[in-house]
Length: 489
Image (cartoon, rainbow, N blue to C red):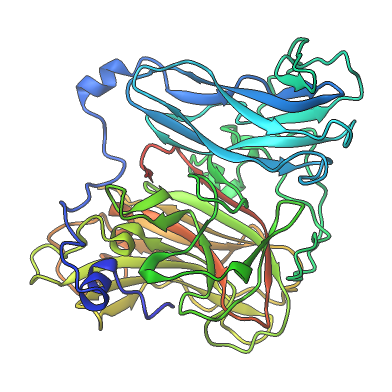
């Protein structure tokens, strides 16, 4: 639990003597039904997809050009973040690791291109992935959401999207329509967790983004979360990458993170600041309307991080952790005032998928904290999820999957959270009723505690503040029904 979770509104007032950091209306309920007028215009689902599931780059080429298409309803702006991932070809040796964001304006359906530099003399016969990692605006993932790029041994290439060192290109696109796993998916592995910056013994996340339920974990597919809306371990500043955590005037040191050559990230456990060494789906940015850049998730999700860490857990904070925080409260761009309460009486949430703060190898912390009251001394109610989460006996140095399932409440059904360790539920299911703006404090377990989840948007955060337990992150993924309820800045 991060007991120092102060909103930027308080920090602006206390630390910087600024005013007006919080403002705007209370956020609307996520996942609201579209108006009848909007429904009438949605004759085809708006999606972005790779133009092909496979590309072949001729020998001698120095660039692979990958095309991305927008189709369906074209009203409103849209964006798609992308990143490369290692397969048998290795970034830094065979090609250059590349991330970025493609954008479409209202009515724009023109294909967009991704340019990836490749080494004309290395990696022939090997392949890597280009993956759409997140989408924003009026669009969802289509299929395929990734493409396999093969560095061909032939100069008579089969890709019209590659350029040679002489400036020529040619050939037709070699493609398949499969939306499943790429043929260059990585092998299973373990991680050394070393912080030296050398490659871990494992491979990077090699599973392609896809709207196909076949690729979603069973718990996600079971509730209709078949769309992969985030899939990245790339450190960057673009939407869809893991960004250095800079909220609360925090500044991460340069040695806090190492981007390994296999695409994984080693977090060294630097402990020089209160928020440890953290990466997230969002970063603070006062120039944006809601004071953050990146993506915050709404409307329900299944979120999963696969990582290892070494060393001995002794209990207490800070530790290896994977968690979510309420972006409205954390960024301060939207009011988090509890309606009907005195000015300054706030309401927000914190979801801890794992905090490795329990000594030994049989359990870890997992919780939802429903925070309320006046800063800097708020109160909280713990949703009854059975923390600490007992897992029997675990090998923390091996790659393990830590996940949470969030299903929002409706007028007829309760919302809930479930926690998973290596695809098996641990702890209890925590339930709540549909959020009511007039619900009085304090939150009550089984009814109102946890309902704040459903009306806020959630920044994904992963990090480590314990220098004796460095962690290596292989993959970070989020599945949802769609990205429609997310906020992208």
